[in-house]
Length: 82
Ligand SMILES: [Zn+2]
Image (cartoon, rainbow, N blue to C red; front, top):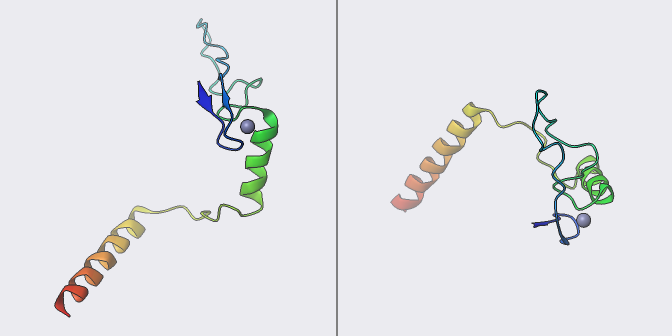
């Protein structure tokens, strides 16, 4: 049982192409909207991305993480002094 991240409805995900065989099953079954309960919710999610509801569009580089960690340490040390 899975829960649709859009509408929150519990649903049974369709397991497509799980029968195995010489050809590997496609990662996403075209008939399935997983992890969404339906193609409608999948479209809603896509719309959210496109309408910038989710604003994380910049890929985080390892350098950025290092810099962020350094900044956190700097602020922590500065805060400890005062
Ligand atoms: Zn849904």
